[in-house]
Length: 188
Image 1 (cartoon, rainbow, N blue to C red):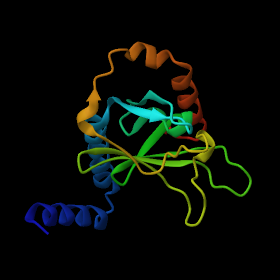
Image 2 (image 1 turned 120 degrees about the vertical axis):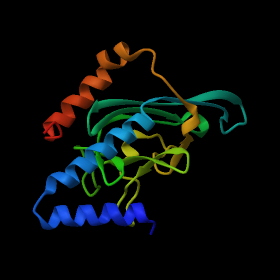
Image 3 (image 1 turned 45 degrees about the horizontal axis):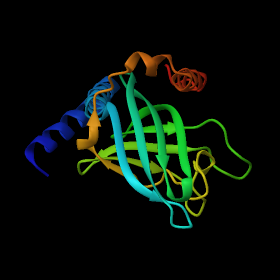
């Protein structure tokens, strides 16, 4: 462990032993802000797709990430898959342990609620569907038969500034996401 990490760990342990949880909260707020700055923008990826009978066509994946608050990120994803299948989801994800975590409120009987993790790793924006061990994808209700939100990655180099921010903030998806987030107590 390098010296900086040892010093940081020492400060956090001291703060915890003195009953100062604010030090940990301040570190989380700083880390959340830094990650939002790294991720915020629109990501697009165009690629050749196909139907089962061999017809080819162009598809485009789109991910929008927008700061909602100091520790929360609005997201909208529209991902394309083979044979015209897709995944479409939007919500507000809260910072936790180095990533943004979205916890859906709706669930089907016997299935866990949708839980997505949005992170930056090895130069990529990564989306992970946090299904329980042995369970099917927790967010599969947002996807067609050949679509999945698990294990999606796109280069951070594809990030572009959102030039249509007023449109995003007025959209039905944004309003729904914020309303659901606030109902779950996320605005606290």
